[in-house]
Length: 230
Image (cartoon, rainbow, N blue to C red):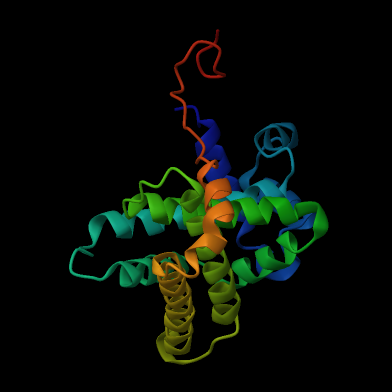
């Protein structure tokens, strides 16, 4: 059976994980993965044009997929919404196969040339969390929810990388404090909106925010789309 594009990429990803702890998500690690897999270098470059960077993003996507599996299979119905968010972030961190690979990834995406890729990956994680938990917002809240959670997730990730407490208990406590801070801020906004003396000061910002809409996801088979072939 001929290996598919995705199968070959998974093979490269599995291979490079043996080298990342020593050489990072680097060209050295990528070449070693190609050698380990016995692949043609040209084929490997066609699958991963940016080499190890593409595999680092694939590693992140693998963790997102594992997180979604847990969100969709575990019963979260008895939890408060804030606890559902906390559970989703925990699921994402617990999905990590290799902590050192994540540490090396943080270093990679801290480089200016790859910072946008790292930010997009984190945003994608948070978007998947909100979507999986049933978010239906279509205005500025679509953005603010994901931006806020991106901050919570990123800071918790960095704390987790340095946490050596049993079962990462210190990390989960840190996560709870961050979410509590967000909840208090949202509560304050609601109080300001409900206060007739303060509400006029928010009239213009709220109007501007109301003009912002979440991106509309178009069906892939529309004429003129890349997947339609027209």
